[in-house]
Length: 558
Image (cartoon, rainbow, N blue to C red; front, side, top):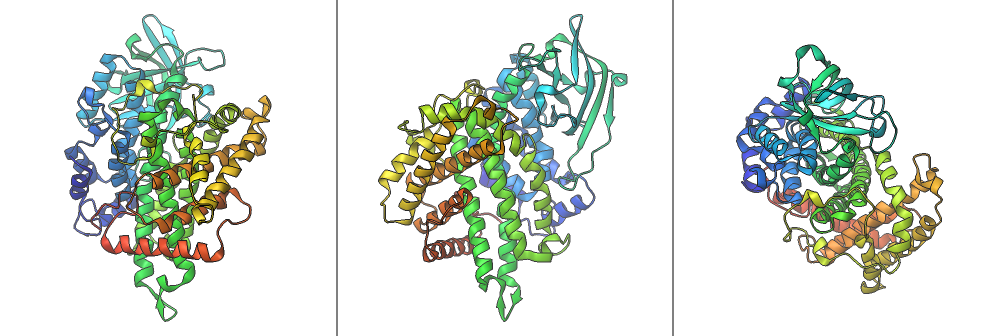
């Protein structure tokens, strides 16, 4: 089934009789429940097949296809997106990466039968510091005994199977933990205790539970990979999910922008409509620019999973970090247009407050923004010395959004040091080829010059600057690196034939990124006004035509 057919199955979200429309979604949120009709619809569609590789009977062949389907769902209801499916992807991707053939077939059988798999990694006392997770698995005969707690885990109570992350060695280091796959039904009831749901302001319908284990027996064949490989498997596997999630989160932002345009176009204020106000037009324009930046950056990351997978150890956390920041900033800007209506849980704008509440935890779930920077920072000195000055540019195929791709091969993902940084390698090329007098040309040169400054600063970093206790100034370098990656990706996507948007909007995208670097503006006030006018008109056109705001510009209902 195509994405368009899936959209048709979801129907018009504004139809009050639609069992998976906004009315039903908001009612389920008020009850703090998953939308049961939505789960039945996803069962009929076979959503879990999107998470299963084709070799095991599913539809997972391309990362961008996976992201596009999930984006359509998250645009309707992030609770369904996380609670029905994405949580099962978080667990199962570890099995596709390192499991035995029997484990993969068992996982495929569960998912293709509309079952659920929970990823039991998180512990409140340790957060994203997986290397210090304290839930333990001790050898016992031919198997293991597990004791400890896992908390704030999606679907843990109703999961058919669980991928558990547990300590298997008392020593510190990267070989201290392992992963295990088991069916809940196979565990003795006396050995486990389901913890109450953890209350949350967002994702209120998702089962965010926990589990307590006391000498819980697991068979020897529950081990995923080898003993001590738990962290390595996670670092490899989650390059996929950390690349997919930023692309998926465009869905809620698309809905939020659509709701704001509804209000701005219809609400009368000061003898006109809200959309007549220059401030409102600028906010809408900048939100669309942010959306397109996220889309271009995440699209390149998804293609890199297929084409340059060795670089994903840096690209995936970079995309997760920057797009989370951009997304949250865009929501806050849009909230200023709706004002008090952005908090209302009834009425035509009520979906906005739900989307805003749901995306906030999604931006730090799975890996926080600070943890992303911790992952990036140690790589920067080597990248600066070897690849940023005169390094080769990425292949043009990396920027051909929607173009052909080889089959996704998770075995090619590696937790080690990237062998190149082709995305940033395009900056010098773009600065040379863009006409110097144009806004895009001047912005390209600004980014190239920033890269030179960044390279010098990163090359001087000391070993003490690369660890978790690094100074804020070191982390700021990692932040700037993500902005330059996004600028290179966005420009290269435009320059490689993506024709669904006019040239006039590109300076607005790059101006938003340049603003995150600080310093004097590259654009003149007139040039910024022109770019934002083009972006606003484009947003209005797409809204009136019933098209998505993203690079696909597909027609949708509602």
